[in-house]
Length: 130
Image: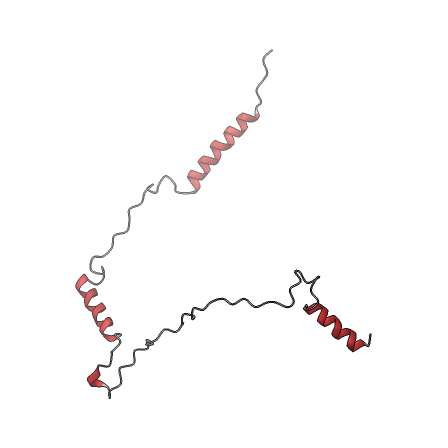
């Protein structure tokens, strides 16, 4: 005997077809172009030309340039530009690392009599009167 196919597959297929048709009808998917054209830009509002940009940059550089006092102009102060003449962050001086022994380190103190823990325990004994 042949196995009878379920009628649910017909229902799922019909539901998918109706869903796609509803989507196409509810949104104007087919009436809009698939790839819309890019908006056209006005050529009059394109921006400054290369020569205008170069002239603006040279004016800004001249205005913000640091003026160095030459030997003949020692009495006159240089113009203030807001740029400091020295670096704000100084490089630390290079020096050798000198290790310092740590008295509170607990490694290998069990055999030494002059360690920090023994000194502290002696001080506590003296204070408490033992």
